[in-house]
Image (spheres, rainbow, N blue to C red):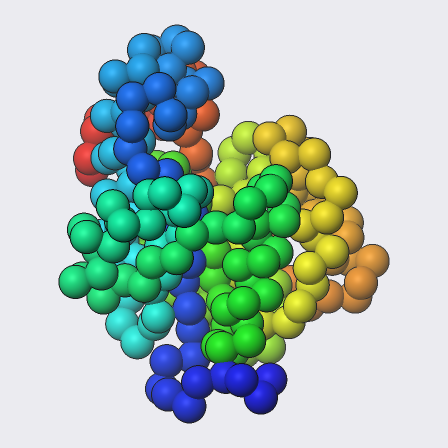
Length: 211
């Protein structure tokens, strides 16, 4: 695309995030463990995500808060660490992801979007996705054990996977794969990771805090 940057950084990694606030993050988890503990867990997962992405060299790092009101909070903490900060657009999850990819693919050849609530994902997962895109794969998905996905990476505009999906259901990954197959997309699916939405997710992961 004609608007792309003329730099050596050909990959953007986007992190969707929420400002850590009591009662505003991990609300399903909070119903079981309490709002304060849910906040503590989310804060740990967010910071771990920031650390893992920051280990990767030669990428453009973008933090996208869920609310425009919280852009300044993230900028004060992370801009000096090399992160660009801009808010997600309004609307459902599918629309927010599509708009994020639409804007970043106009600038970089490869774009990787991840969430901020996955336990034990590593920078190497993102590196694997980056390598697959560089070698001709169009879309890479990182499955979550609940049937969704925590990572989606693209070098081609297969935006149909963000439309008409009922999110937070156990068939999100399956429906996404079916759409990619219908469009003859060259895609790959990584090893699954555990995200955290409910108390049983913590038990299943053997949660030990920041490790």
